[in-house]
Amino acid sequence: MKTWAHRKADGRRLLLYGTTAYVLPPLAEGPSITENLSHLRWHPLRMEWVAYAAGRQERAFLPPAEFCPLCPTRPGGPPTEIPFEDFEVAVFENRFPAFADQPGPLPEIPGETAQAAGACEVVVYTPEHTGSLGTLAQERRELLVRVWAQRYRELCEREGVRFVMPFENRGEAVGVTLHHPHGQIYAYPFVPPVLQAEVAAFRRGPVLQNLLAQVGSRYIVEEDDAAAVIVPPFARFPYEVWVVPKRAQPGPWTFEDAEVTAVARTLGRVVSRYDALFARPFPYVMVLHAAPKGEEAHFHFHVEFYPVMRGADRLKYLAGTELGAGTYTVDVLPEDAARALRQVEP
Ligand SMILES: [Zn+2]
Image 1 (cartoon, rainbow, N blue to C red):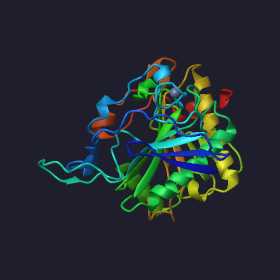
Image 2: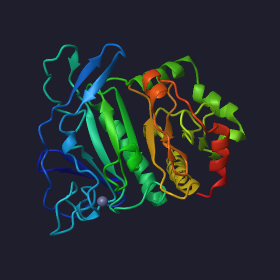
Image 3: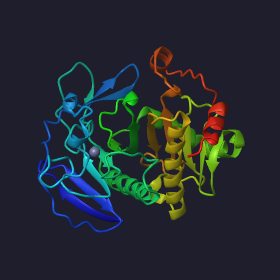
């Protein structure tokens, strides 16, 4: 994998990753960064941090394709976030970060605050404006897995970073404001609550390996020697799917080639199955759960998909019991979801 580092006019870092070396000169730059006001406030009842990224309301909201900030810049055309006329995978620092190298000042408020040190990056999967993880070429998906591995390594080395999470929000139903195929990476200065729970589970035992050994064919959507795609028998979302490497790996940075290939391939096939399920682009949240720093010995990396569809034209909303109590109600049984996903052709 070849890497090309570029410093944008406003100081933000842009990294181009490719299978071949990058040679094109940079073009005109887009809008500059606004004042960074990111900081953390402690929630004393939930005992967790809340991250503030004031200024986010100004971001582009569903711009027409010709003003897409994630497309390559056309020579003579309007500047985008990527001042190059072509690339394979691009990563740049978010213009409105919740976590940053140089976080904002701490405000005077009643309650505890903290520096939102960390990083928020945008990962652009392709220069093509349309498409998905399902339609990308396998070679590009493998490059993306290697880019994730490289970002994990670099961000985890930063002082103060405790946990790094690549994720993708797909579809207007989950609040996506740009349709260009892309994801994000957050680097947190603390271990967030969901990961604290997973760490506690993995410290007690190899829960994910036990699950793989127990689930049986009813819950397996597909598998090969290196990875399995399962609907967890306790799924909290209709059609929730996990992609799990069979060997317990702390994260993509320890993958062997076979695991890069298998994870890249199965991520694409999950998205293709989703799109085939109701014959429409399927909105979801995809998160990568790798080991927080210091937890590498026990943790078992996996990818979780949280879809928000519960039928061809019915959305699943998080409401009273989910938001107010943290208890999920689901009206599609996981064994039925697994069968439906197995039956569609990716
Ligand atoms: Zn675009």
